[in-house]
Image (cartoon, rainbow, N blue to C red; front, side, top):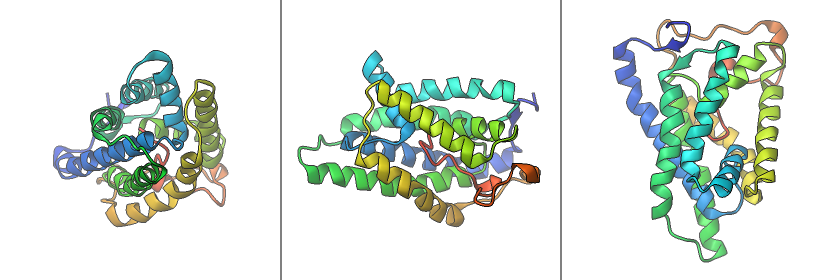
Length: 234
């Protein structure tokens, strides 16, 4: 089981779990605001929205289902699932489904922008808290790091994954717009700002193993602070 799951001792889990849950709920609220603004979504939510529009399944539920499909891809990559991985997969999408019906329907451009800006601001501390809890990577992080361990840089893998998600979502009818561009430009600095202030550090015995030098590019972020900046996702 230890080859499949990486769970710290209970005292560490008890200390970190509230951080994880609060961060993921904040992310769910943030993504719900961005969806409701209807000015363009992040790449993974473009995909989720496209699937939702085609199937009639709520977008948050689609996010949960896609997350678990992505986690299945960890098996051949031999990535270990953390408690945070499972909670991430469930809680962000569930929060979106709960919050969306209660958000106001924006009847003006100003209201749309208020929702978009609110979501973009809120996602930073949300990511900082859930990544800072260090209870396991998000579903999409595991795919990214698993592929990067086999040769390509993290930056190259991440860019490829995001472009595939964006293209598939666009073909399915997902919303691409100014919000997509603003999310891409702001989420990294925003999340990094909060992560440096909210990071609890790795649990004892769970420090990351450094990647071989051949896998590193000068502009790659350190592997132990490489968050799932896109959908926290979810």
